[in-house]
Amino acid sequence: MAGPLAGVRILDLTTVVMGPFATQILAELGADVIKIEPREGDNMRHVGPMKTEGMGHLYLHLNRGKRDLVLDLKQPEGRAALLRLARDADVLVYNVRPAAIARLGLAYDDVRAVNPRIVYVGAYGYSERGPNAGKAAYDDLIQGGTGLPWLASRKGTAAPHYAPVNLADRVTGLHLTYAVTAALFHRERTGEGQSVEVPMYESVAQFVLGDHLAGLSYVPPIGGTGYARLQERRPYKTKDGWLCVLVYNDKQWRKFLQAVGRDDLLADERFASQGNRAAHIGEIYAFLAELFATRTNAEWTVLLDGIDVPVGPMHTVADMVTDPHLVQSGFFEAEHHPSEGDVLAPRTPTNWSASPPGPRRPAPRLGEHSAEILREAGYTDAEITELASKRVTHVAPGSDAGH
Image (cartoon, rainbow, N blue to C red):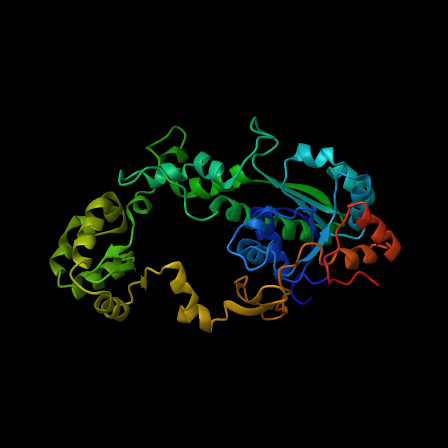
């Protein structure tokens, strides 16, 4: 594997979205990510649409670049195999509750005993330092607990609702990604492995409060919560559709008001400065909403591009597939999957001048690399066959079983 993380081996015990999202980024950056699955597979394998049973679209988009090993960690032989792999691994990542990983005999002290240099990273709902430690958590609960549905309903136009993406999972996944790389950097400097905690609730709370803590930032408070502009903003209805526009700084406002023939408002205190516009944000956005309804998307785009005011379309999800910028920048990679055929694969969006990642392998079938990985850990073909017969592992039909 090529890329900035080439040579790093990661044991990936994560499932669903949060952990696999993070470990896919690490895999796409060149790490050898070994996905450890139970015999029934990751839950996301079974979420459609899909062409082949066990290869759902979410699974495909969360597990590119990984190798797959089936291990029943509840059986002693499965735990022993995992610990044998851990001896030569750089990182172990999991996203079940700490009590559950401890019951498997795979807590930090257990793994550190076979590899003191291991970077051991747990991502789960709530920090072990607080009273919610050990509680179950999913994206919905974390979005609710961090105020996102409440914020979505603040204008009274809708009931509280969750963001229609796995926002808490993916935000936490990004924290998980940098936690792994930072811990590896620390180990390169010191030789020291460590255990790292990445809790969902705290990760998303930081994300939300950075914008909305507002007057509660001060002790004692000097006002309420909320960044008003974020609570007002929305796409604008035009004559023939919707448009995303942000007239933001003083220079942009001067150019904009002149271009639309409203020079008179240059003397209006409400428009005079960033602070004044923020104080009257409801009136400002109402003015813009009324104005944008008078012209078409194309007319506004030409005008706003001409005065360097940010403007863009309101895409559907399907629109992004043919968006000229995403297509020409190489964001989509054509992938031919052995079982799924041609797949459109959005890639990790970073670009590297000195250590570009190489081609990624497609998302693996369940147990596709079981024999290969166990053989690398020193198991003989006869031992692998015995593990398979005991249902400790599973070797995908058609994969290399060493025979």
